[in-house]
Amino acid sequence: MDELVHREAPSPNWNERALPITMAVLHYTEMESCDASLARLSDPEAQVSAHYLISEEGQVIRLVDESKRAWHAGASYWRGLRDVNSASVGIELQHPGHGLGYREFDDRQIEALVPLLHRIVRKHNIPRANVVAHSDVAPARKTDPGELFPWETLARYRLCLPRPEKFEVGDPFDNDAAFYLALERFGYDIADGKKAVEAFQRRWRPEKINGEIDGQVRAILFQLLLDRDRGLTR
Ligand SMILES: [Zn+2]
Image 1: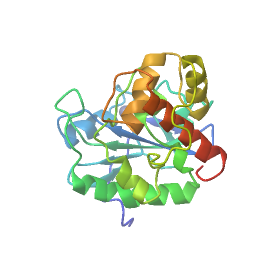
Image 2: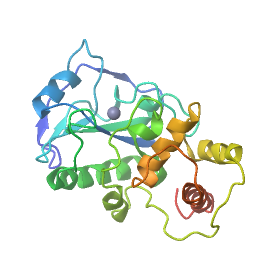
Image 3: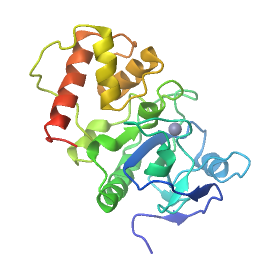
């Protein structure tokens, strides 16, 4: 028995991967209960799934084997890649989401997520820069897991990139076109520019999400790219 998985509930909603695993995508379910989420993620009609579902109490349920392609990301893009489902492990967190009453994530849920994600990242050698939100890979459509998700907790365990704190250049990029090019280089689909900026803010500056490119947003993106390109992060 697997000590990090409390329950097996195989979903029929998967197929074979077309790419090696290089990403992890975090979601919220936006459902009223874990049972309702489990039913939906296993419903052949719904055509959705994830590898894992974590209840608010911290119960980890496995729905799809990591070697298979689960159907959680939908139409998505990250760092040049469009078949995010083929390249990722998908984790759903039971949560009412923005639609049913957005609130803090339960500590027990995060305490269950940390060791599970640690194992996934280590097993597949996933770069920290590729542990992302659904909103990062589908900025025009998705907002999950949202601005209250505790990324800094994951960053302390080196499971995702931390928010940059020291800036070598105060306000880089002298025009918006240069900013969008840089945002695309970091990974985002910029087809809808305002939504892409909102998704970037939701992940990296959650205290102010307005879709506007300001000096602080420019500085954070520049520092993220600088650190990654120097190999300080990957
Ligand atoms: Zn999602």
